[in-house]
Image 1 (tube, rainbow, N blue to C red):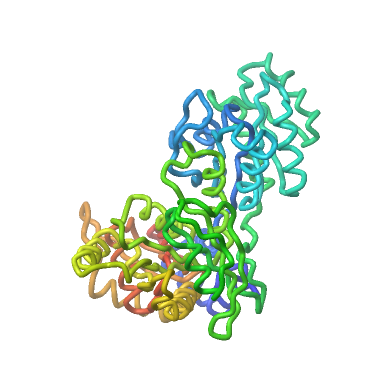
Image 2: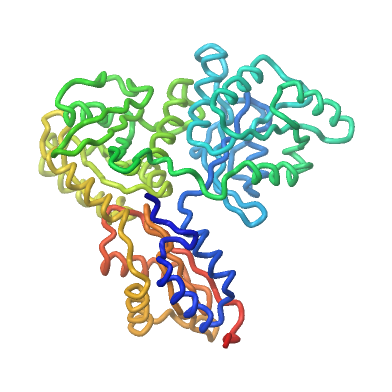
Length: 482
């Protein structure tokens, strides 16, 4: 059952009372409704940008997101740490997944194109298929078309590298792909991208489907994520009580996630074992690159991310990046420190210092010290997962939230800046999974003050094991409505 009405997670009576309060404070009713609706939708719709190497996907992604963030070089296979970006067009926000630059011949052309595109498409609500109009439709393009048809997702066809009128005829030739109208664009110069994005918005849902795969009574989904060879497969085998996954000392044995229904404590859970995330995603040999995309897709489909950290090694930039990916995806989070039984006193001392300094961004996540090999403390894993899920689904009634905000404003007002002191006027929790709050204020709230509000929300209401999203709307006019 969906807990989000058209007006977020607010019940009808609560909503009416809230809107009255908003009108009294001089806020436009449509603006308030829009803010609640936007925050209540939760995860943004996802657009996958697919196509063969060197057709200009990354350049087009830069054009869409409006900044030069996806690294572009004139050869396939350039390095990028991230493949997901946030974009906005015509007032609507969405995620863009750039699948640019993979090695075409690693697994044979059909297999590699299929694997590459499939993993990106799986987590997408719609696809933007980019073809080089100066070359025309190739066999590789045809292979991608078959894949898109099989996936059944809405598709927008971009005929790229159309730099003038002469290129329009080349673009028209792409009707032959059977995907509908080709939109002639130049990702380099920006030509035609406005019309293209208008069409993208028509294909993207206002809010994405619930992808968690937990129909009422269905098993909750848990993604095991972490660096290669951190012990994810061993952990899954230990939890399952049998060898279900190949375990090998060679890092990166797991290529595809394996979904396992496992009963623990009288409850059935669906565990997804994922291939390790490696550092430089686009320099990986084909199979590892696909594994990274597959991991991203597994996180998208999971409700809880159990992040494994190898305690015998220093907490690395890679670990940090994996944590950031899970937090940004809005999943409930548990941190499992693996190989704990292998630590001596000195390493344990330094590890605790590392955790204090390097793991601050997830200080709110439940922590378990385990050994996937010996089974040490495995019984603590399920309670930690249940705690994180409870935090992820916590909802604070609007009345109680506003009493709490009133106390904060009275005891810890925002610092005066430029002779003005912005105030939080009222707020509401617009959604759960993860908890999403909208605060309405008389002026801009600084990042430090927002962090303080988040910290106080956690102290007051728990929210253990879950990220919290806070958006702030500033009142435009001082005039109060009667």
